[in-house]
Image (cartoon, rainbow, N blue to C red; front, side, top):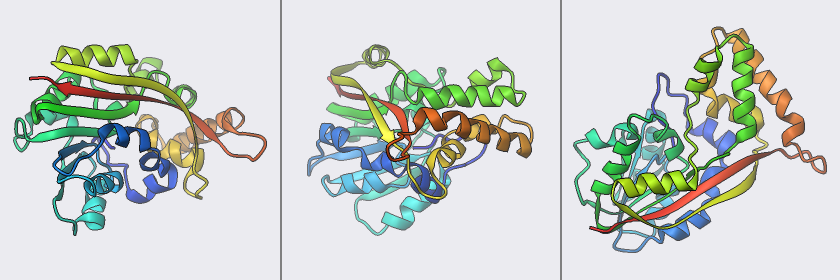
Length: 277
């Protein structure tokens, strides 16, 4: 679920504290994946392996790729004892250049909550989709869920404003954003361009309750998911000020008054695409 940048901000502990709901809210996309006993599956952006391990229980074998050394290490420690499950440290932006990815090796390629990081760079976006296509057997399926157009718009907007307030230029702040949240139409166009036939797709607005862990909530989410924004701020003091600005600005917007819970406006884009030939 991570894309390697200058620093590896990802840890199993931080992810569990601020985003434990991500591998839990997956019933729809796992149903779309429909793992079969004979399936050989590649999981792009597998994170700490929590969901990957659950999928393995229903298929022949699964390989998880992720760009975070911390998360791959956590996956190996937690699930390395299982047979026919393996982990590969790999920046999936450059999937097409990975010699270990064999053409036609997989019956299904899967991804959950990772492609909006992996596809951020427009110069490698299509090559990632081409690599997924090549990795599939004829008739194989590419099944994924990612952030879609409008995903977490409230925190995205406030993060931009917060780092601009701390001296980052507007254009630099926009270019710093680590996310790509496409519309359903654009994603279907890109998949068609590389040869996929899209079987089904949907864009769902799914408000999601933030965690209440001491290291989680909106502050934990901001520090982890917004780390690349904060890295652009020139001093620790200003970074902390930016985090405070984000949390205070969103307190009213995200809070449900009846119980004090905080909810982010997640928008999920789900797709099943088939390699026809």
